[in-house]
Length: 246
Image (cartoon, rainbow, N blue to C red):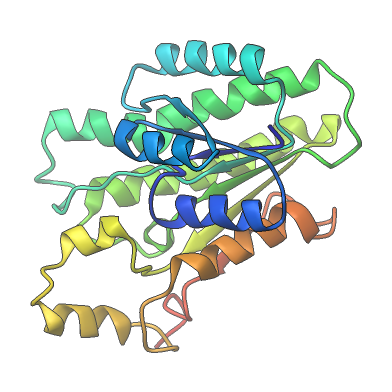
């Protein structure tokens, strides 16, 4: 499989899978959503179960098994994520652990395992690429999603560290930073009848609307497939101007 899409059963990840398919790039979808995975298999898309909420050691072991079975991908898209709508102060110890594993520690172990495997074989220089889907909350923390903001900030820092660690092997690492995107995760946080809050979020950007999953996927694919080699260790903010809006 040329590409692995972690969290590819929903939202931005699912759109990345669709756009890879349009470009005739074979992808392996990795997720803990077995029902969505079964639907993908029926459409001829490869799927494997992996739950980032497991211990980091279990994630690393499972990733190693996938590498043995499928071989080395060229591109890894990390799009999995989980949030809780509560402040950092009020987040329970159990949720701190869960959000840490899914949004940070599991991602670290999966990427580290792949990166170590990549270093052991010869590839075309700078062809291998990890694209991490971060969050604008890492740059402008949202108090109502405190723990999620903390973990995404850690993920952004990890991506920069990893880009340094693998540069000598001509591997690229970049972070795409979405703003408010109308995905199932965000939909679950907002009542369909809560039009006031939906408008408030939309108007918090210069563009004045929610972003679309396909817009973020387009950027993620451009970064991985078409961007110049000189782009590495970067954060590409795709938020409709949310961060810069006065």
